[in-house]
Length: 482
Image 1 (cartoon, rainbow, N blue to C red):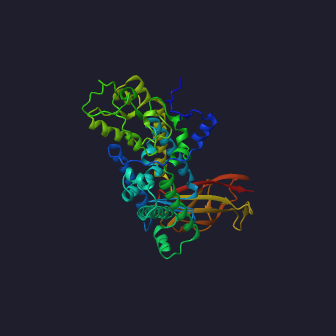
Image 2 (image 1 turned 90 degrees about the horizontal axis):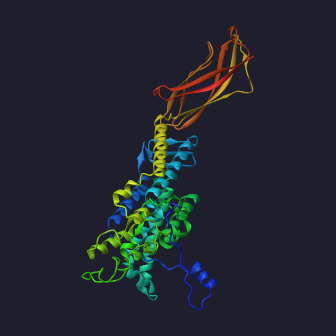
Image 3 (image 1 turned 120 degrees about the horizontal axis):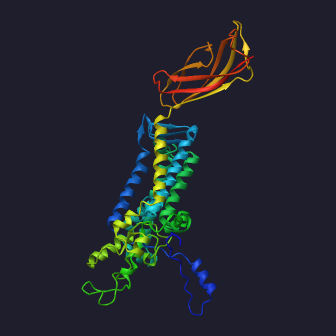
């Protein structure tokens, strides 16, 4: 038996006298029914808004922060430099981007294995911006009933005014989002001046409009369609679920048979379960599904139905948890919460967690020990080796020194590996901040040394900053004797 929990399958209803193929085509190609999510309050809804505020303050606020006289976070693609607070990353540091992608993937695997689609329900940009756009919609058009009534009403001045105000607010917010996004690639203060004076470049203008209207279209119009049909995560999430994954579940044994009743009625005497069939769990769902039908790939794990059902249970004086976070095993085997959570530390979770900690720790150590000095040594192949006037053998090299810090540096160059090997020229070189410099070097040894046989000899070049000895790099090279 597979450990993957079953997913509710869509049902195609064939009406009397209707062809089965016609019914299937209608189910597959039916026009979308607009979802009107109802506002909900509760513990999980509060956490969603905490994540909305946290992510958006980070996104919109970080772009305006300054560090060392420049933008704190800036991805300067034209200059091929990425600034992240006190760190400057160059193309040679793509290794760290790879590590970041690996950590993101492992985090997604870990969180999904433990508690399902936490990312989708609380921090995914599609969820966050849909929540913001819904808030704007509610402020202008009203609650769920008012929005449905407005959409069903005939064309008129009031409807036109409300719709125009809503879409104007959506477009303004989307354009501000696009402006902020581009502000991470073009210094945002310069970009603001260009926008005000209508002098923004073609690429900046294109990406501001593209990202702005993508936000407007995805969060304002498409909404749950993005989660259900465009996002690949909805399709492969079940491969990461098992019977011990926390998911949104409906307690079928406790809730069925469902039916309406007053609070003073004894439901057990009527043969009813705790579900009063109010439909609130469906009304608050941002993807419009009925969680009572079982686990469905459209469920993004936002727990809005948990909050809604909890409020109904409280009013009916019933125990909480008819809809709750639980595992398939806990529901089938009637496990207690303590037993359920003890099974969370299963092998796959431990493996994901250990890999995540090890790779994150290695990345942090690598960043801490990272030397912001890059050195490359190239031999002059036009002159392999030559004997100069004073009887010494000379090799010519070129050192490519890159100062990746935001401060100018003076470096000392030395060479070792052979007796009496030395530089024929200045040993100190200055390199400007965030710049590279090609330094020609002449390296000599005395030809009369008895142990100096013909052929190649290994030598080492050492480059170190005068004011910061920790910034030292040693590179190997070959000295030719003929």
